[in-house]
Length: 254
Image (tube, rainbow, N blue to C red; front, side, top):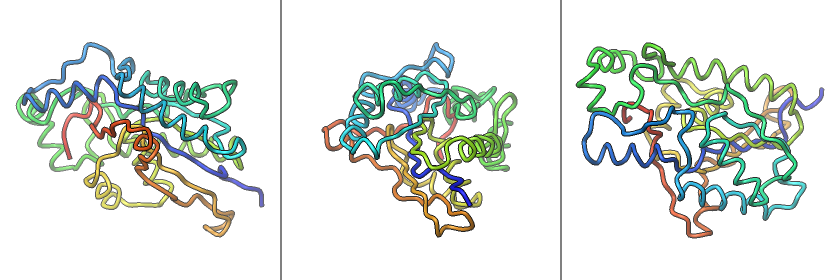
């Protein structure tokens, strides 16, 4: 039986964005809304986020050429494409390798609660706050938005594409916090409680690396086995501050 998974898979959260900065400012000031003028898709990296992406690019560049990413799949959101481009420009993978934008890797959509803080959700949309509390964020789908289950469904489709077109290759994915967690849910065959327990733990750092290697013994035809999660040594090695803020369009903590 031929290999049906990548030889190695890295899943990277984008660098710190202007949205991360705005979100933290809103929470520190106890505001109901996060001050952002752009669409979520257009939120850029902060200057610090650019440095984080460059540090990660240097980490990949220090690997032997035969160990670096060969194929790159990216969320179409600006903060993700900019992160991937900076990794490439720092020597992280072949400069001629195109960034394959895949809309299935986009950020979770929050619909009508987009841009609200926890206080804003409770004060301005109490019915949605109550639904989120009763259903849990894994299943709560705000009007016009997505639940975690919706994200998982599109990522199952993405992984079918990865298995079909990138088997045996070294693949880098650059996307978002919820996407990273939902990919772990699928690849590691988790349940709701397990993935939400990880989410309640240490927050996923900007430009952190989640890495899988193919193991021929992991089930029929082999499988991907987690090697590291939330790995931030590339930034620490260059004395670049590690940041862990959630994205601006995530409505509530926890």
